[in-house]
Image 1 (cartoon, rainbow, N blue to C red):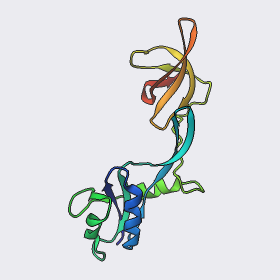
Image 2 (tube, one colour):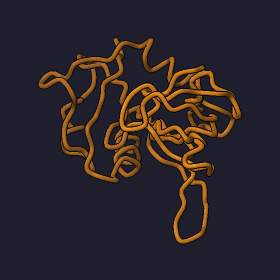
Image 3 (cartoon, rainbow, N blue to C red):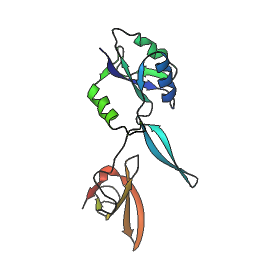
Image 4 (tube, rainbow, N blue to C red):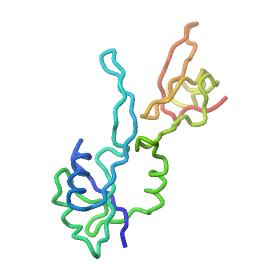
Length: 165
């Protein structure tokens, strides 16, 4: 029976590993999402792995030469040892169900906050300050507009430390 397994890859070698696994006849999937990157006054949207250095491969350990995965270009190991530990199909299917028409996984980390909603910072150096929710980035850092010393100041804090007012 075919099951999903997790493959650990070399840094930035996920796409190469997927390609080489497919060339060997394995069903491999690298979940990717759209990331906005800012650099030198430019903003661009790029594809990035949802789980850097990890991808999924669907195998039947009884009927396929799965040990050849270890020798595949870009692969470091399989998660779980020898034999590798399978991943619940429901986990992979949940991630696959979030794919858009472009094949990229849609990420909605907005925590239920709408832009302009009042929030409170619950912990950290800015604890108990209230401000306005601006946005959330792909690293789960929330942008909050605070009023400090009579001036609006934009700060970034961990998403877990923000709550609705």
